[in-house]
Image (cartoon, rainbow, N blue to C red):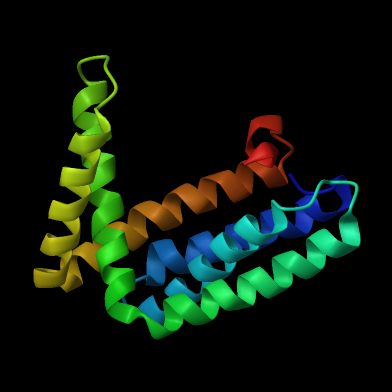
Length: 155
């Protein structure tokens, strides 16, 4: 969780990234991958430090974000496969949620692998659907955090 003074800029960054991903995801896929890599890398690296360690947490977030952005920018096909794997995991969870159950980990892994394989063959369609869903979710979380929703600020 970010310190309170950094939550509004982070919400604005999520909002802008969500708009780019949702509406221009296919045309700007490498940029969308770079933004997603930065967000993931920053989140993972900054989670090492506590909220009270603001300086080291920001340094780790910037370094981790740059590393994550470089990795996903360079790994275009890996990014496509990750989008497919994410969609496969989403489908597995939606199917099991309809029956009020959680899927077993092996089922999620199988759906993720099937999604990754399918995304390599059907790149264009998986990129369009994946960036639209991911961008819409990021846009909603950023907008909710910007208007002060406590649950969105935690994410």
